[in-house]
Length: 320
Length: 239
Image (cartoon, rainbow over the protein chains, first blue to last red):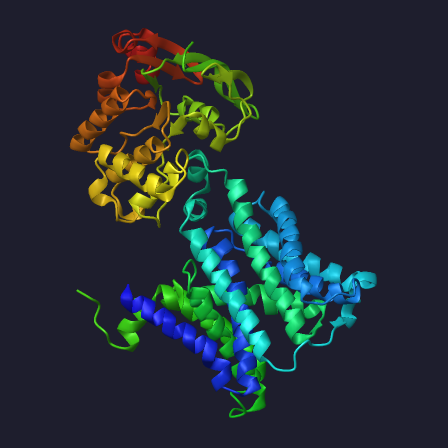
């Protein structure tokens, strides 16, 4: 316990000191994006990992959050930072709607329904040009020149997201979520209102994902439907972050976020310019291979199978 | 007024009538057994009582109030716990967490839920297994876990669906003892069972059905000697 506390404090100090030590805005940018993915991955994990409702449509909440922040500027003429608050709330509204439709289905059927839902939202955002500007997208002016404010905002968001999920998982809700994942019929017969608790899980998950979306609008200052409602770049990425890091673990998605963003960037930059340029086209292939590898050898992800990794990589014998 | 009243219960699946006009009651503190050959409709009656299926006609009343159309989880909150014939352990949770999760049906705080779970596990003789994952339990343990989980919801009526099936003789004796202990604590029990040793030793009354219809009702001795029951189980020429 003592050791764990010290480790957390050290990690926190590193996290706070990082942008002050590493002045390169390129690396600061990568960590900011990773932290954003910590939020999305952890939220996805709450719904899919803990509650067992695998979503292929988290881009819905990310996109709704991002567009809420963007529309605050273009439609209401207020700061996009209001979107951080409203984005979470509108994403929850979207969550209510998605839950109302998709929770009639179970297992893979639920997953497919959310997949379709994501595409529907993307098409709405593309075609409702009077509201969203369609494919033109929304461009705003960044509030800060420096990356530091963005870094600390997203750090606080990511930490509070993980903290809230941790608190939830230690409460009655946590027991209920996992019960529903393990056997929905058994849970129902134990007096658990499964519809209600699945919706609670979805709403918390969509709230944080919406906040992450609103942060993205503020930080990148440009969005269009192909980016924020993207199946490939958002919904699937959320799943990869969860699976690689470790489904149904508190820190898994956080670790997964850094691995996936790091990997994505490695390929995008053709191994930082060291490899021929065509390799940047191969990132989807690499992600595919990675997922196959993780599912075959580390089904519980890097965090969930950490003991296994230690055993193989570091040749540490398991504690007798 | 009986605790549970089944009144002219009928359940059809499209053309097939699985339960046809069955009526019986369970009084407080009583053990009633529901018997019948395979496919007689016993588990269907359970699924109707806890509202997994909507019933076709008739009524089910609990403590004098109709429970028709309620949700499964509401039935549990009212005070009807059930176990499943095909056990449904929450596999990747520990035994303790399985029972803690169901304790929240009545208690609010984590501490209370865990305390109650400990008591129930002690009662069901599972306390030594409490930190194991539910999926690592053998069938006997899983059946007891089903009962423990249902008991943690503090039911007034417990529905036991073939709790003794698949147990070895010593586990069987333990199961019988456990069911008796539950009765002593004041909970009424409705049992579906095939193993005659269990039925004969625990039942206050037996209700026999075949092809969805009542064929006999009475004390264990009366039912055991009933011609229709012997016919249903062994065929006409043996009766």
